[in-house]
Image (cartoon, rainbow, N blue to C red; front, side, top):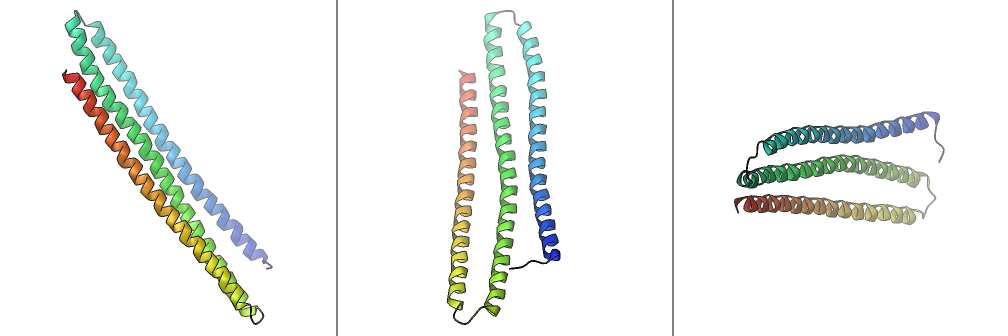
Length: 180
């Protein structure tokens, strides 16, 4: 099928816009990740200074034991929150990519079907069966893609639930250890 210069220009423009959207999602995810890491580094530095000051003020073993318990729980809670935040940023960035890919696939399918419809109008008699088979194949591939997307979303939700359960359990374990 021959494409006019206008069609090529429109296709190149659409591809450039798509690439820019993908880059935007990637940059936004990277910015959020860097921001999260900077905040964690600042917090860790401040906590380290406070811990060093508290350790320098210890005068006997009972104070040292109490200090150990007081420092362990907040550190574990912060580490768990940091891990969850990293996971959330990664998941949201991946979801942004998934939305863009789904839009690209839908647009491609629409263009293929439109092209097939044009072909039907100019095709010789008897070729309708072949074109219907191609459309049926496209529908089957789309159905498989939709099912795969649903499974991936369910897997992501299950992983997030498991991560939250592990974080809750880890925090509870540290609290129990601190009480003993």
